[in-house]
Length: 225
Length: 278
Image (tube, rainbow over all chains, first blue to last red; front, side):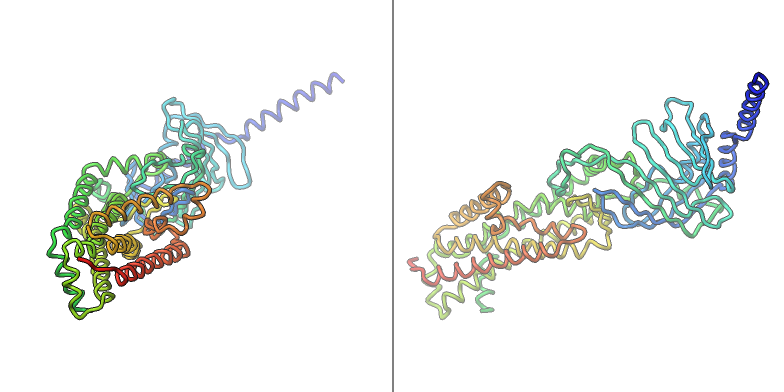
């Protein structure tokens, strides 16, 4: 019986050690994702933005998006467009470049799950869960809890390009219900009980006609008055 | 009939009162345009504040179309006053000036004369609304570029600029029709009076009373609301909804046309039976 107990303890220790050894390093996973994304120094692409929020009706807006590393971004379209602040590929990468602690938290058939907690208390997000593709080392899905601006989710669909740029992005978010007491500009019917409450919305971004790592003049990113 | 209408038009535009409406609209539109030019950005920021957490805005929503819509929304209550001033004077003015007996010695029937006056009054009303359209959209081009339009209509509707013009044209056409009701009412009162002030004040009183009833959402008023023309005066806004509710527009248009017809025939009956003493 005594030998059996010792054998059991040694077995448990070795099993735990081997499991610990097999657990992927979350920091390395994030580093790999960042390394792959860094291959894209600039890109431009056509984009169609479809906003789905129950109190906003806006037609699908088409335009062209421009990006230049590290953080220059511009969307150009005729007319007015609502561009999601969160969910553009480069904004995700800049989040991951912040100082953080990464923890491996499991896996599914296709992805490794990593939790990212920023070390800076002033950071815009509190925690992010990433579904990182096991084979391609790119983010398939992301769930972010922000600092006071609700949660949002991102889902990326990739095409057959050499670079890891999504051809479609789905952004799910929370948005505050409107309560506008301005009769002269129209008549917005909002349930007073719901005014100010957060409701769910989503945006689909469909990209096409990519031009990657080409030369984009800085003048493209200058705001027009 | 053509000659009679021409004569009525020449009489109409020789009176200073006719131009009050045009001058008032010009001034109001100018003031609103300048106000929006100075403060429009703040208004928009307030409007879209709750969206700015989630979205960044590309393009400008304060533009010719949005400002024109704001002008219409704020001015629509005042146009009836301007319309009633002229329509209310069409028949009673002649009676007050004592020119009817002389006028009716000519070989025209009372019906023809009244119809010519009615057509003139309604044409003036249409001119006033078209002037408002040309001014708000045309003057707006001096201050703004065209662009997508923001409308609060049950939801926040952002309309593509390629989808706006037909809406404005339809809204103004509807606006002409709704103002014809007000003009018809003032004209009806005009056939009953011998001074201009009475019909103007009477039609305005009816308008105010009916507007109040139209806005009450209780018991008995709910029953009569569908029959009041004031319920449908702001129906021009329906063309800026997405999708447009054509059934409601058709119903509203029917009620307005019935009112226009009723006011005309009532005025005709009163005028043809009237004892002309001046």
